[in-house]
Length: 88
Image 1 (cartoon, one colour):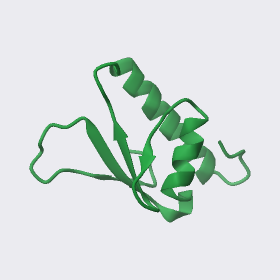
Image 2: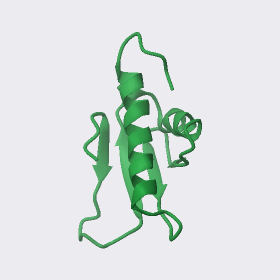
Image 3: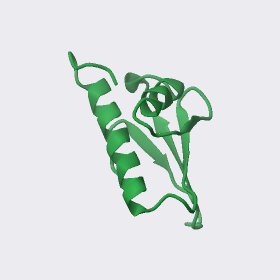
């Protein structure tokens, strides 16, 4: 998705997977904080440690659902990065 402040962790062998891992820049807060803000927007991800997050799709998640999750992720990261804007 190319969201500033998030660094994707790419499998070394390009193995197809339904899991996405990324590191959260500390300037955006912690992984658990990011996950809590996503949850308020109806998107569930899990923090694996203070800065790493995992997102998983399953058979019930279609392309539109993935797009909504990416939009929510972009919105919470943008709101956190912009000074003076409400957090959420």
